[in-house]
Image (cartoon, rainbow, N blue to C red; front, side, top):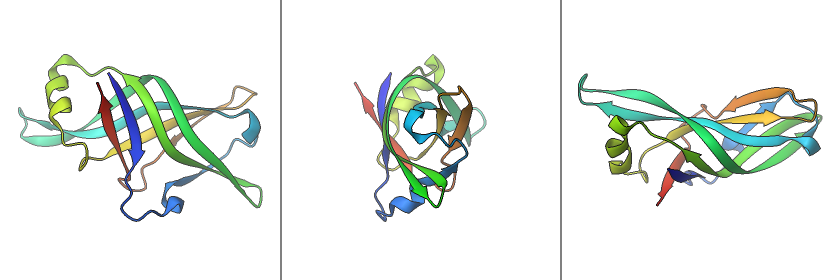
Length: 132
């Protein structure tokens, strides 16, 4: 399945999408979408449950901001390839993604092969658009 992950543009304040990162070599930074989490209604328990989806391949649009030697990464959007379990697939496709939110996690790697994971969990600020 393919989807595009987008910012929700309710307040248009990009600072809400910034996250500090510890990797210091911004020029060699490789950024991938590692996974995302969404809420799925489980008919068996009659409750919403968080579901994590691992991303196989992604193309991430981002910016790096350097503020007094402290780097921040700003996620703008990402295209993602992933698979959904068959039992979740129908519910996933039936969601109204304009109103739903997801929590994306980025995997950052620098030239030293150090990895850092950044989860945008400060608020529900992203959604996705399924690409058929």
